[in-house]
Length: 424
Image 1 (spheres, rainbow, N blue to C red):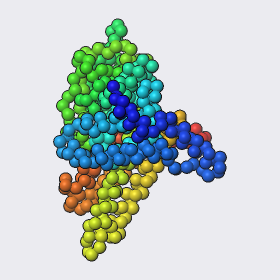
Image 2: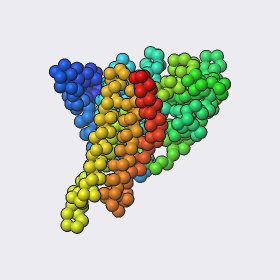
Image 3: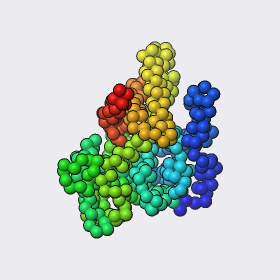
Image 4: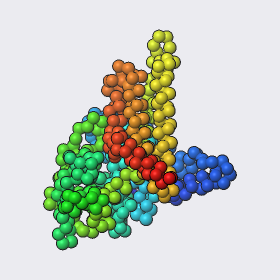
């Protein structure tokens, strides 16, 4: 159980537990009433969360990021410290012991932590993705049991949907669950599962209708699966191009018995549950990309103001200055897209369109900023003694996980055309 000290820290450092999204709404309503338009100002509480995460990244993440990247060691001690401060699982409702922060606040925290190391932040963010199906669709028993334990101890969980032969094509999932009495028998293999080897429990998407002609919207079901269930076997830790501090593995389920009470809602609702989680988690993932982009911009700016060629700092050369300008444009616009997509959630509105725009734009911006940073550093940027080569490796995954850049464009175009048809 979280110690009294950690609870005191939670109160003193992160302040009041009241929903700051309500405050944000009041600010916007008051501004609009005064004909001033929407306000981009953060509330005092939001600034507290942001400052706390920023200090934590500077003090606890940045000093160890390079070594974690080199060794691939899982950053459990860092995560435990973040959990003690309330920077992990802050989106869980106060009803189940959490802070109940809004999406905007979660994105502010995520950007700051990602500035320190996106590998560490991905390990933290994986909790949010696995928890979201339970938050959105779990019954009271499931929420108390599985969300409650995340508040009591610094535990991890994982979202198991992707398979060796099914990534963006979710309809091709082969993992199946067959009901026998008061339990389901689960068999299959998942791949590229973040937190796969350290999770306490998994959200698993499995086929429950054996008819191959059954539509994805009715063929799959979502389950909560305990890690220590007999037949659950995590594979080896994958050595990835970047974000090496996070734990990525394949998971095999062999005749795993899952209590029927661990089925989320009803059979056949799994696809909607799994995809619905992305609307909530893509804004924080995009915020992570913004954090990386900002770090690349800051590192490149500092270096360009120190490095001299042809008698002057390289930032005074137009070629370099324009690269910095492009990075500024990208980071600022991506950040606004993130906040818009998060704000839509806090207003209780469907944000699919904005979430995909934020994820797509921020992922592309992170890669552009990291590439420009390496270019500005020149030969030094290609060397592990300097921070930007890691940023370039870390950035690429933002165009792949939680829906590729191409999938985001498919979603955006589909949503846009639907809106266009509804206007006529």
